[in-house]
Image 1 (cartoon, helix red, strand yellow):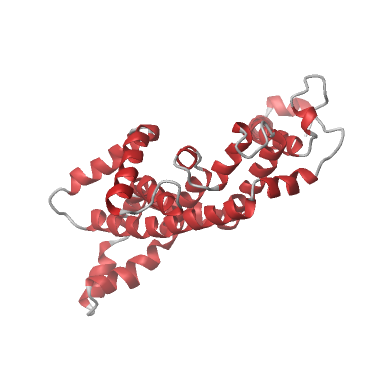
Image 2 (cartoon, helix red, strand yellow; image 1 turned 45 degrees about the vertical axis):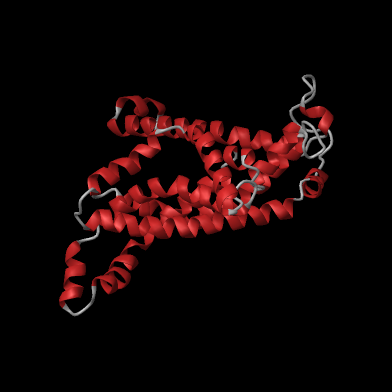
Length: 291
């Protein structure tokens, strides 16, 4: 196609428009990837070059040992194990209770159902940091009166993340259960199945994409949470990485170690998302068909 045809014919103008939007999209991708690219460079730089205003953006010496030194100084094995335990258990329990509550709201009309739905949604409109002091005092009260240690323990992290991410998960799954035809359950019950059997063998298999999407959402969000885990003394990876700024790990302002740890933390989430992205997107779009 000649250059003149790009401006004078409908096909040419359509192709020009496609090129324009492609250019915009690639520019957005570059903007999104730029911080990650810079973080990779910082993780491989000598410490003295990171805050040097006259140094090149690329390291003069590629320090791959930053990763091994970070791993040892931060006791990364323990932090990784704690994060996996806290986030994994919170995801399983949060998804389970969210599915039960969402199914009840989608299928049954009972007194207080609307008020409960609005209350659940309203909790998401309040900034999370406002919960910190009441939450901390509650954890202290439970320790003092019931003897259950929640501050500084994995149990506290599990309780925290279940409470934080269950409300929005209920809303995600509620839309999803509402999109499943009621006729399928009624037909199963006409054939002799109980309500529980219809739920387990008819509804749950159809709701798997939505349940998996919700579980992925809880896991990814809890995995990156730092403020509450750090202030409540829960030793997860984000809270541990924060120590490189405060010097609690014995090394102040180690941005090289922090960048290396951040990349290592992001790898499990990135791998999980790439493996499950089709199911995650399918779950979100299918649940949005009917609210």
